[in-house]
Length: 360
Image (tube, rainbow, N blue to C red):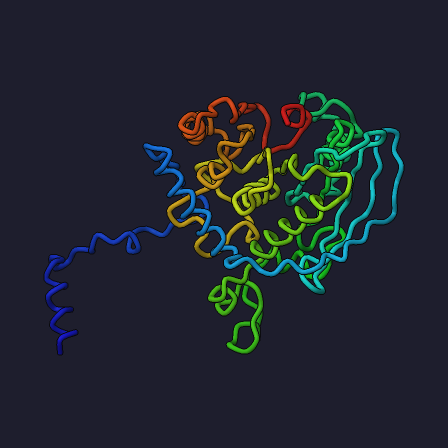
C-alpha cells in the first residue's frame, strides 16, 4: 500500500501528457552521434573525472577486476633478415588456449635495451596490399614509394625498426594467423545465431554475453594488454620507453590500451579521435563504454603524456575545432600544452599514409 501511495505521489510531479526529464527517455544515440568533451575547471576535478572514466572503460571491457595474467608461453620463430632489421613470427597465449599472433620487428646493430612500439592494425589487416592503387596514391602525395605504399601497415613497422624501435604488430581476431574466432563473428555479426543465446549456452553479441560484459572488444583489449606484457618482457626492450600507434580500428585499440594501462609513454592514435563517429565495427563497441563520454575524452585519459594524431577527410575532419581545442586545453591545465599535437591533412581520406607516418 505504501509503495502504491509513493507511485501516485511521484506521478503527480509530472503533468499529464508530458515526458519526465530523464536522459534515458531521450532519443537513442548511436556511434554516429555527437560525443563532445567538456574539460573540467581544475586539475583536481579532472583527476576525479579521469578515475571514473577509467573505471567505466575497465567495466565495459569486462576487465574489472583485471583477470589473472597467466603465462604467455610465447614462441618467436621464422626469422627473416633485412638489411636494417629482422622480422620474426610470434604466437603467445593471452589466456590459456587462446593465441595471439603477429610479427616482431627488431633493429639491427642496436645494442642495449631499446625503445619499443605496439602497432595494432585496423580493419585492412596487417597484410593489406593496395596493389596498383599505390601509383595514384604516389601521384596524390599520399605515398612516396611503391613498396611501402602497397603495404602501409608493415611499412610503419619497418620504419620504426629502422629508427631503432622494437615493434610488434599483432592480428585482430579473425585476421591473418588469428583463426580461433573468425572474422564473420568478430567483425561481421549482424544476426543472432540460433541456439547461442540461452542461459546455459551463448555466444558473443548475445543477451547472455552482454549481461556478463563478454565482448569482442573486451577480448581484443585483453589481447592488446598481453601484447604489451609480451613486448615489455623482451630482454632487448626498455619497458619505460614503450609507445603505441595504430589507425582506424588500430586507433581505437591505441586509445583503449592507453586508457587501461599506465605503462605506455607516448601514443599516436590515428584516425579515431573525433567527437563524431566513434567506431563502425562491432569490435569497437561494448555496452557501457561511451555512456557520458566519447573518444576524445578517452584519448584525454593519456594526458599529460605526449601524443599526436591527424585530422583527415573522414569523421575526424572537424577535430581542429571540435575535439583538439579541448585536448589542448586539458594539456595546458596539466602544464603540458605542447605535448599534444593534431595536424590537419583534410586533402587525404582515412589513412595512415606516408605523410602521417612521417608525423609519427
